[in-house]
Image (cartoon, rainbow over all chains, first blue to last red; front, side, top):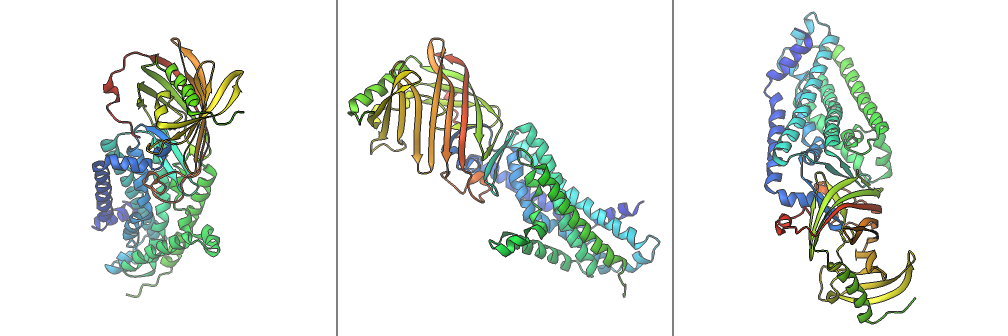
Length: 280
Length: 212
């Protein structure tokens, strides 16, 4: 059995790993049921001001629109659910007293930290894919398919993606969301190598995400000059993939930035872990 | 250019345009909309429009479909002369024919109506241009090209110029509720084809409301 498999098994033996899946299931189900119950009102709300100037026809409230709407939760509760597991990856060994045994066994520290990091990425990917499958699956069941209409608030414009394009773009958006959320995971993972308990890395990483978001939204020149250096600036990469046409240059730029953050955070975690002095 | 004429003359022109439409009891037409609006990234949209006198309209589309209100579905009957103060603005030559421009201002007790300027071709009594400004920050004008279908002169193309700098109901954009509303400024081309006129459409077709 490879180290990676062992780490994945260890991760999925912890009950907290399933909190994320349970929360995602409950949140998506709750939201889609609420939207279904208030379907007429929600359809009007989703059409917004458009219906005052246009005659609108077609299935506005469909699986792709609902999925894009729910994907906004990637900014809110999903980072917390990622941090909940990622922040526990290394520190849990210290908490449970197994870190000394882990360190004195044949696999090198390098292999151990790599396998733990890959297990964290695996969990992140699985949680986001679970979110995607639930959103689309329940959405198709409740609301059916249709064209995706989306309001892009940053550069105000309306995007309409035909149903077949919407499916592909939504798939790509979820893949981009995995990359986006992996940075939160990497951050919590780094913090996890620094301390001997899990609470610190979880709260610490979420605090960094929140502060970064606040800094990124402050309407001051100073805050705007920080934008290129904040990882939260690039976390909305998935929004770029629900555009028409897709700005691939921008997607590439955002991807490189996120991969850069992942690499830097993992490198720091690696450095801390391989030099870690086990005292107890 | 003439000054404002009495209500009678303007109303007469409008009634002529309405009467021209009298033989059309109902129709079904295929519609294709092409948007050239910077803030709207949408593919060409197709739908079938059902119309029955006096003002029943139903839009049926496989995918999402939207077209400018007021100027997208041509129905002279909606300009009821009894509901407007009508004045002749000027007479002009429109594509080689005599035409007249009239302004329609809703009477005080008429809610839901708004100022409209119509250009009516005096040769065929067809509405060839419509300009509206339903609320501050929204202007739309449409130029209508007609063709002959089963002996009826019906629109084949409408070129709409839209300038919506402020969407009414701002802040509820597609449930996302963030940021500014887009500025809808640009051109919309609406193509009409495959008319089926006076086929005796059932009222049942119009029972299910459109999403609008």
